[in-house]
Amino acid sequence: MERSQVAIIGSGLIGRSWAMVFAAGGFKVKLYDIAQQQLMSALEGIRQQMKEMEKLGVLKGALSAEQQLALISVCTDLKAAVEGATFIQECTPENLELKKKIFSQLDLIVDDNVILSSSTSCLLPSKLFTGLKHVKQCIVSHPVNPPYFVPLVEIVPHPETDPSTTERTYALMKKIGQSPVKLNREIEGFVLNRLQYAVISEAWRLVGEGVISPTDLDLVMSDGLGMRYAFIGPLETMHLNAEGVSNYCERYAEGMKLVLNTFGPVPEFSGETAQKVNQALSEKIPVVPKVLDARRKWRDECLTGLAKLKTQMKSD
Image 1 (cartoon, rainbow, N blue to C red):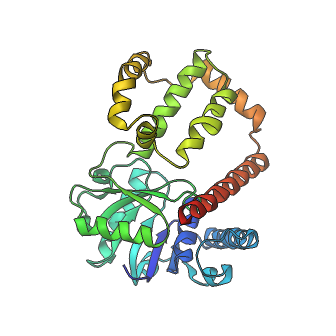
Image 2: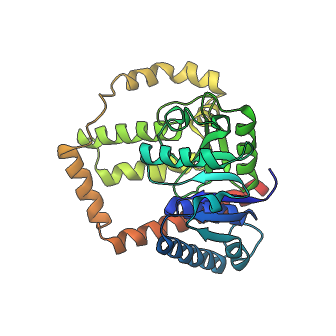
Image 3: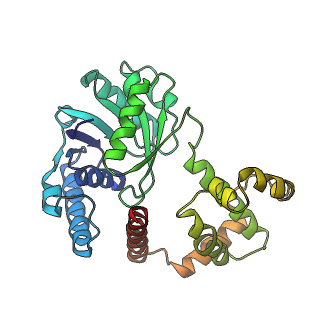
């Protein structure tokens, strides 16, 4: 897909981040929302982030912050926003009816070449796109929050999505510096959230059963598994922790099954355990907007530094 114009539908945190990612890749970006004030706020937020990252030397892409900002324009008219776009990324709130309404509107105004993509994190493509005239051009491109700092994108097709739509989306994500993965079919939660929920579920049970404190549980991930998983996944970990995967399974399959059989039912995520976890995390990070924003900024700085390190190590 040639570098051309893309449209971002929705100027919240995900929409802003997508706009920055595409601008860093040299694409012209039309950012759409229904309120001009929201768009002005989004533009100012993008400007501040880009300027700060440029100052720190971690701005993505070959263009300067000003050059990237010049590629982003805003629009409150949906038809005008998507005119000339070859790729449309929807970033509205996670509400099925709202997203279906947006895609039904887009379905009436786009041609047969534009790709219609959703940022949804859990709504199945079959629920979003079924019945649309341009269903073959529809796909889910689920980013990890925040997309600018975490490059993974899950590409999930509708059962009727044309294979060329998947391939074009994959190529586009590679071109703008993201790390796309293709799902061969839709599944509840896609892949990232299924893995994430499995970890959260067992973490919740371990805390709820008094095995470990909430803060120590998080340390197991941040200073344990997370250190390794920042560079390799669980399957490669198996491969390297023995003489290949087959050898790992021979050595550890019985032990894994023994442990897995002790896992309890899906937690309710409420009651005493919820209070315990909330209290521990609130003591560490008080639920005050200023404090939460500062911690999020720190998180993003850490992710930026990690991304920079990973890029350097790959080039070495």
